[in-house]
Structures are given as C-alpha cells and as structure tokens.
Amino acid sequence: MARILAAWELGGALGHLANLRPFVEASLARGHEVTLAVKELRHVPLVYRNHPRLQLFQAPYHYRATQRPYRPLRSFTQLLLQRFETPEELATLHQGWRAILDACRPDLVVADFAPTLHLAARGGPWQQWAVGNGFFVPRTDLPYLGVFPGVRRSEENAQSLAEAESRLLALANPLLERHGQPPLPGAAALYSELDRHWLMTLSELDTFGSRPEAEYLGLPPLASGEAPPWPSVPGPRVFAYLSACSAMEPLLEALAQQQAAVVIYCRDLSPEVARRFPNLHLAGAPVDMRQAMQQADLVINMANHATAACAYLAGVPQLLIPRRQEQLFLAQRLAGQGKAVAMPPDSPDPAKALVKALALPPAPAPEARLDHQFDHYTGQRLMERIALQLESLA
Image 1 (cartoon, rainbow, N blue to C red):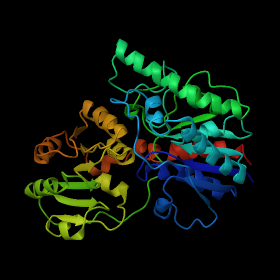
Image 2 (cartoon, rainbow, N blue to C red; image 1 turned 90 degrees about the horizontal axis):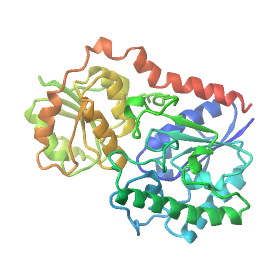
Image 3 (spheres, rainbow, N blue to C red; image 1 turned 180 degrees about the vertical axis):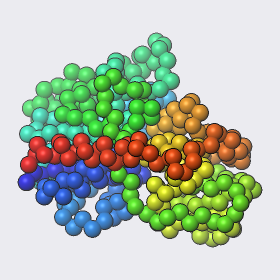
C-alpha cells in the first residue's frame, strides 16, 4: 500500500478538486492511503462524496489582497509572486506544507496549482506530479516560466520578466538553503524538476500553445447528473453553467427574447429571479454534461476549462464570459478558432454577444457529437495513464 498526498493550493472554483478526483479515486480503488490537502475544504463534499477513507488537511494559504500586483501580468512567475510576496510569508507557507508532509509521509505528491508545496517537497523521498490544464502546468522549455499569450518582445517586457524571475529566486533559494536543499537554477526548475506533468487539456486549448512532444490527456471523467429538463419553448436549446455577474439578468432577458429553452446551473442565481423567466429551468444539482453537450444548440459558461473543453469536443458553439486570467486566455483561444464568442462579465449589452454566438456554425447532428474522440478525451485516455502509473507504487 502506498501513501498519496493530493493537494490544491491556489485558484478558485471546483475545477481544481475535480482534476484531483481521478487520481484520488483510482488510488483508493487500489487500496492506497490518500490524504487530501486543499484550499477550500467547504467544497470537498460537492466533489468527493462517500469517501470516508480520505484524510483531510487545510492547505496553507494567505487570505489577503495582493500588495504588489503586476499590471499587466506577463508570466506564471509574476502570478506566483502575487501570492507570496515576502520571505516571511513564503516561509510560513513552506512550514505549513512541511508539517503536512511530515504527518502523511507520502510516496507520491499529486498537486494541482500548488507551487509552494512543490518547493516544500523538493528533494524528498517521494515522486512529485503536477496536474491541471495548460494554464496551471506552465511551460518550462522556453525563456522564463510560462510567458502569457500576447506578451510582445520589447525591452520593457523583458525587463519585467527578468525582474520577476530574480525576485522569485531571491525569495525561494535562501529558504531552500536553510532546509539543506540546493538552490533553484531558475524559476522554471520549480516545475521542470518534477517527475511528471499531467496536461489535462487538449493541444488546441493549451494556454501556452501546443507543446512539442507533450502528451495531452484530455479531461477527467464526466460526473453524472440529472438529465437536462428542457423547457417547452420553440427556440434553440441553451445550456448555461454560470456564476453571478452583472450581465446575468440582461443575458437571461436576451435569452427570453430569443425564445430559447434554457437549462442553467448556477449556485448564485436565486429561484425568485429564475421564476421571472418561463423559458428557463434552474437546475438544483449539476446537469449530466454528456447529455447537455449532445442536446444543446449553444453552451454559455464562464470559460471554465472543463465545460468549455466539453463543448469544444462536442462541436457545440459557445458564449464565454471570462472573469479570471486563465479564463480570458481560453476564451481568446476559442474565439480565435471561430468556436465561440467572448464577452466581459460586465457587458452592458449581452444581447449582441448572444446573437453573434447563436449565429456561429451549428453543432453536428446529436448522434454525431459524442464520437470516439469525445469519449477518448473525457476520461478514457487519462484513466488509462493513471492506472499505468499507479501500478508502479504497489
């Protein structure tokens, strides 16, 4: 029996927990001992049901506003530096992760967006895997660590990128030295030294562009849910997975004007608001994504990776409302391929974006959407690779 630490440190929403779930469940099924250390313990019951064998820890995290923001953010290094900004702050996070490592003594560390854990686990007697989509597993084969799309070659940008790399090393290397570890030769070593990168995305959706010789494993298996209960109205079927934003109610009004049959899953939308729109069904639990992608004419989401990638695989047009940096990059990538229309969450006129999205080339016929590629990249490929790697831990 092996001991496995699955961890999530930075970022929001449920996607990080969902990315860890295949590794956790495959490990438990093989009799391994699993510890889960995550940023948002309150979300664990939503993703991990009926897993009494899980040992839980709160991931070390500083809940505070960024004191020294980079505007604009140019690289993954700069993103990390907004979460640990002083030697003392990084040291306390490092100490917290070391305590968790000492408590569970893992043979394997599986981490989704947990850079301080990678630092704390450096040189330990365990394997380290980084898992996640293309944004959260940054490229290490180019100058600097994860330069963001659209950053031009200029003296100003080069100076900003180089300063961030130096600043990260100045924070990390004295800490490593105090713990008897060799210094990082560069910021990229925080990820390049890991035993394995699990790219849980598609090459077409990789934030940093398709990587040479990378293995793209697709998405975790789709969670089960209720069948989409489409309202009986004559317009297009629209599946929406949304969070609260100022454009929400104007968008719902625009959907009503289009006589769209809308199924929406939104934990922030009140039933009182939903009842104002007879063309809308507010799902009280997650919807079966497989059926939603097969039946919908349009998918609206916040450019969260899993939903957007599912719609992309099924060939369904999308209206994307990105709020975070990684969501913006994904929305730009899909819009650039003619697969989606992107709009800001505070758009004053979402009706225009909706009309453009409805005018995108239609999805394939329902029976042609869920083909071999869809199944291959919504769990099959990933689970096959996980099974092979876990065999070596027996």
